[in-house]
Amino acid sequence: MSIIISLFLIGISLSMDTFSVCLSIGSFNINKKTILLFSIYVGILHFFMPLFGFILGNKITTYLNINCHLLLGIILIFIGIEMLIQLFKKEDTINLSLINMLILGISVSLDSFSTGLGINAISSDIILSGLIFSVCAFSFTFIGLLIGKYSHDNLGIISNIIGIILLFLIGILNIIK
Image (tube, rainbow, N blue to C red; front, side, top):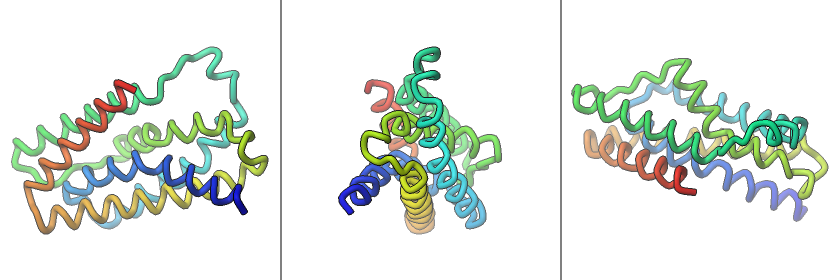
């Protein structure tokens, strides 16, 4: 039972960056279909990324020195810049295209990949770990996008500005980690 609680706490912590990013993105009036599709996509990635981390493990980290926080920070800042440009164009809807969803989904799931590298220290059941991470990621992504959309509906451009500021802050904080 304590292993499941530990896995849920890890799943929640892995989902926090996704949640905060989705608050920002949701503030740009994303439609409900995109909210659901992106949430499912992030949930699926949070299932498979720890599996890949577990399977590939040290082989990849030995050959490629990937700094997940730096990569995520750069991507978030670029998304923030795109949102800022759209704000000046007086557009309150962001086009979360398939390519943007793929890149963003992978970037917020990289931390679950690195968690998969050492997950066997916590649990030998990698499938259960992936399922718990997936449920947490889906839930936090969905809730973050809905809260962001709600803030857009009630606060308008102020929520867009807050969303952009949050993206820049989260991006910068990830870069300096």
